[in-house]
Amino acid sequence: MPIPAREIETDYLIVGAGAAGMAFADTLIDQSDADIVIVDQRGKPGGHWNDAYPFVTLHQPSAFYGVNSTELGSGRKDHIGLNAGLYELASGAEVAAYYDRVMNHRLLASGRVRHYPLCRHVGGGEFESLLSGARTRVTVRRRIVDATYGAPVIPSLHTPRFECAPGVRLVAPNALPGLGHGAPAGPAARRFVVIGAGKTAMDTCVWLLQSGADPDAIRWVVPRDSWLINRLTTQTGPEFFDESIGGQAAQMQACAEATSVDDLFLRLEACGAMLRIDADRTPTMFHFATISLAEREVLRKIVHVIRLGHVRALEPSRMVLDGGSVEVEPGTLFIDCSASAVEFRPTLPVFEPGRIVLQLLRLPQPAFSAALTAYVEAREDDDASKNRLCTAVAFPHTLAEYPGALLANMRNQYVWSQDKALRDWIRASRLDGFGRLMAGADKQDAAKQATLARYKEQAGAAMANLPRFAAAAHG
Image (cartoon, rainbow, N blue to C red; front, side, top):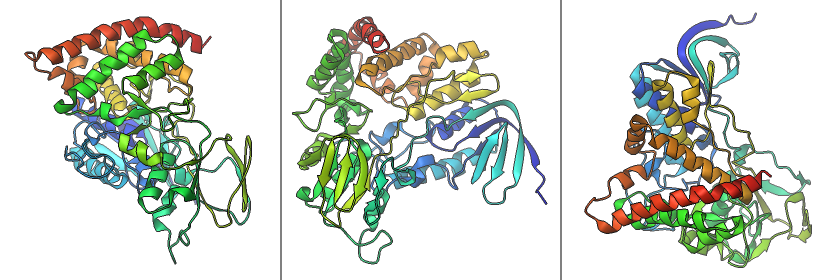
């Protein structure tokens, strides 16, 4: 006989216990007396971090990732490795453990949050246990919060879009540390093909090289070269004021003076904000991946870069791509890094009657965006006001779309700056990154004050110049 559905009540039903859902819940319990139910299909909080490849790390400093109430990491700098001299980057295991701690010692400990893991939301406030099939009907007094709308595609759960013939050895990056005699992933390999041009592929190439692979034994399939953010410009410590805030001022000047989209990216490269791996190739993609100069030098050791478009089929002795075929040695290990973390999704109103859809309000910061959404939900009365403060920013999928995304970021920032309470909350938020750095600049330091003045001046000029590029992208 079917198991009768049980009935519960709550103010907010949050669907998804990943970065966005956790950040939203954390700020909401801080800013309101709301009761919250969180459902998630995974067995532990942390979303995609539970399925990430073992050698993944954050792209940018731990200092402004996670939830607003709880520090991630210790605020130290790395002294060795490819991030030496810069602030720590939490590993995937550290991030997953962090979210487990936040759930148990912050959210559940509040007495106002209930977590239902291994449960699937079937719609209308009803969810089903993946283990028993038992259903729970939730009377939601305020909103259902969709924290899954922007969820990334995970390499280990990704189905390749190319054919794979029998006898081809194809693995996800997750399998690499387990390579060896008798290991579940199979024996170690001597030849490798890395498929994909995004940050996962870059991480995989770096891991292979640092683990002892011969650069000459690696072939890297790069359908499109990418512009990359220079991690030096993302540091939040006061000793990096010139690189971070001065870098922001330089980027605004590049936006103000650019004569085309291509010219904009070249100017961003010239001021040190953007990097490219191959100096002889002009990138045609930008997905906000962030690397250090040291990582770039490691990646430049790979000389067998295949630029024939996307892979269409893998065979034991060759690859078939858009632009032709390439022979490979038998026994080559193919590593599928082709999953996209930024699949196209149209922007939606964040607030609707009975519903919130968490989306990016500032690229590329999902945790900050979700926390800000929760703050606005707790203090504003009507959806029109809330949507004015929380306008979703579309992720750019072409270089031509980047100026429009940047302009949307800047417009949101301007709207926030006109609301004193929200402005003060942002400046105090650990997820903001640069707000405290700018607000904490010594008033007696003429050089820093000059940098801040330059940033404001160039930001205004950028907002006057960027709309023509944004309009052209949609024309």
